Image (tube, rainbow, N blue to C red; front, side, top):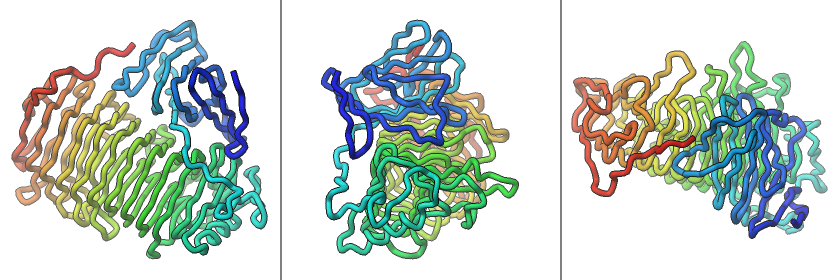
Length: 508
């Protein structure tokens, strides 16, 4: 077995059996799990004990063998998403299985806390810090402290400002290490921010270090100032440290809050520890999120820690992403003075205590042409949802395609537990909705809700094609246990000849 140290990302690289595995250094302030350990092709991968679950992060190519060792004998396990059909074997307290492509997994072993495995593809465009258009923040004139002991906000902001001033832009390079950031950082046009594997931009966990208002983000842009061509990429971490900032005044922090940007790319990074909407993308267009991972605490049921929200945005693709959070995972919102349209969430995995995929609750302007496609919702209180709460514009032309929901269960008092919700708290029509090849492992503890608000704010023209609940093809609202009211019309059910399989076979 060949072991090579890669200087750029300060990671261990192991080549074996025509595969390559990249692991990342542990941040000193994080806690290693005492419940699980993980080896990949025989190499130990750090597993972090993270609030109410545990997670590990790596990148690879080829085929790899993973071995999870638990703190007790394994008597039962589930590898989710179940649609991946990953088969494992157990021996006493170990679970072994293989992967031949990047996957984001949630493992439930016995009654232990969940184990999340974030297995990314290898990076293909790592910048060279020796290049003239790459500024390494640990090199002169910046000399950033990477121990996490000193506030680096002004130094990193200086590097961002310098890069933005270069004609055509350049890259701010953040090597492995922990960089403490008071308050927030402002991205600008033509800036690429690269976070190497093991690099953490850590918001200060000390409330006394924060001078900004509640609900601000660790990484943002100047609101009202147009920006273009901003990129955030790598395998590093943006950590808001928000749970430690909660106090009697309910102070909240977000992670990523870009405004007014045309051409926004976010790739490969982890966004973690938010107590409000983790990524609140506002009035932006031509947006790409790919292989972005959101990990938040889920035990504090007072949080509004949505995953990735497109707020008044156009022309966005959010794909191959992972969200583990308390509140709604993927959302489109018509707000902040702009329409939301042509937004695609696809090929992703969700674990949440609220809605897996959702349009609304904001309809303050036009809200249409929204797509949720090929998404596995491992845990939720509602699998798919459309809601009106603010604004009275129609929410229309919404598509839910190939959505697979496993467990429907809610911890927060007052939240509901049902597969589908299409309803209005305030006036506003909901119309022209496609639900195709959507399946639920069970029908949920409560009935689904299909309800309009009034005779002028109806729910209308909803087509269910190949809808399965508990393995049963649903062809009417009665069999689907869907409650309706007088303000609903045009609900139809169809069965295509190509869909006769029963989703969700048994899985250990």
